[in-house]
Amino acid sequence: MTVVDRRLWVPTEVNVDAPSAARVYDYLLGGSYNFAADRAFAQQAIGIHPGLPMVCRENRSFLRRAVRHCVANGITQFLDIGSGLPTSGNVHEVAPEARVVYVDNEPVAVAHSRMMLKDSDRAAIVHADLRDPETILAAPETRRLLDFDQPVGLLIVAVLHFVLDTDLVKTVLAHYRDQLAPGSFLVLSHGTLEQQAPSAKAIQDLYNRSPNKVITRTKQECIELMDGFDLVEPGVVFTPLWRPEPLAEKLERPEDAGWYGMAGRLL
Image 1 (cartoon, rainbow, N blue to C red):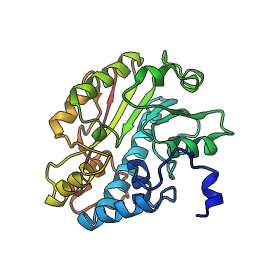
Image 2: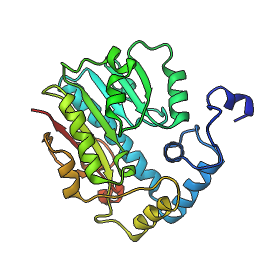
Image 3: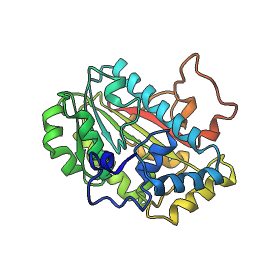
Image 4: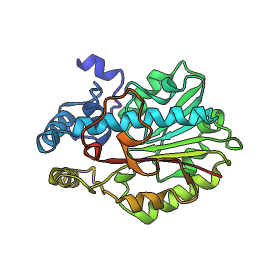
């Protein structure tokens, strides 16, 4: 990518010499909105845990299936927090008739999303942090597109491991939950070390030596994050096991996907 190309979508304040979790994830998914520092970090991680790109792909597939499940149950609007860089299979592509508000705190993700969505009247991006629900909920884009008197699909996928304080996570989730109408869905995915190879812990250690510190959580801890929501079958399971497509290729060891996926409905 040339310098001229970069100027079209990279905010001037972005430090392209430091890896960003969102851009590393984009690279692991096969995206092109990443820089040398992101690719180097990702390659180091793959050297430690070669299955990491598969982990990310399975997580993305889980998101698409969860969105389709929400649509099948009447959801016509989504709030996708921590949406990251716009790779294929975005919510507004999976649910083209829905209204979607994306939220991210990564400047490159926000800048490129704004470019991609500039002509859309059904989707928008908000530059904000998961931990600041009041800003997200009061944003003009949110108020224009979402009606919180009606059910909403709240998507917080591959994000909560960057919030190390579990009590804060629960407080923030409760704040969002209290704004949702009955019939709304909460969709989460979260990394775990349960049933994982030692290399998974090495990946966590690698991230924790970077600015993108992470925490893993157990299945029971993930269940507790769904407080107030009625878990959708099959409950909290590794992402490939959450309502897989009938003809989808099955992993020999689904637990190698390394992430729990879950969805719950607000009664």
